[in-house]
Length: 173
Image 1: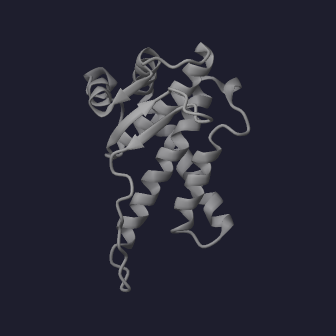
Image 2: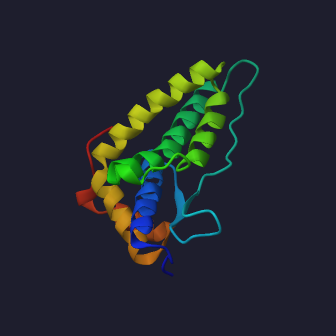
């Protein structure tokens, strides 16, 4: 299936979604699928294979570290879409691009931060980590984006095949 949008819009959306895919993949979060086929107001999306897994934190704090690591990974995935789009085409970014991604990042951050100021600082720090991840894995982002522009939608298997190429392995993050 091929997306029915203008090529420039498809390419910026493809890089946006590819940023999410590569950030998830690098951090060991499974990706179920990715698409740039428009669905109403949604220009593209990524489905994570591990979505909605719950982490229990006991009254004694057991599980808190695991929750913190999960939150960091999820926020990095959230912000990597807009960051990849901006890296690919800085002029393509609009105020509303990535709004849902940042809303999700704030929701994740609020589960481990105590105030709005802490949430902002935490997300800013994780954006810096995401930028480094994307810089180190940019060939993988390009490969996924090109696959999305070609096919419109990539399955989990197609994503895994694209990302398994030895030339796409970047530096440690």
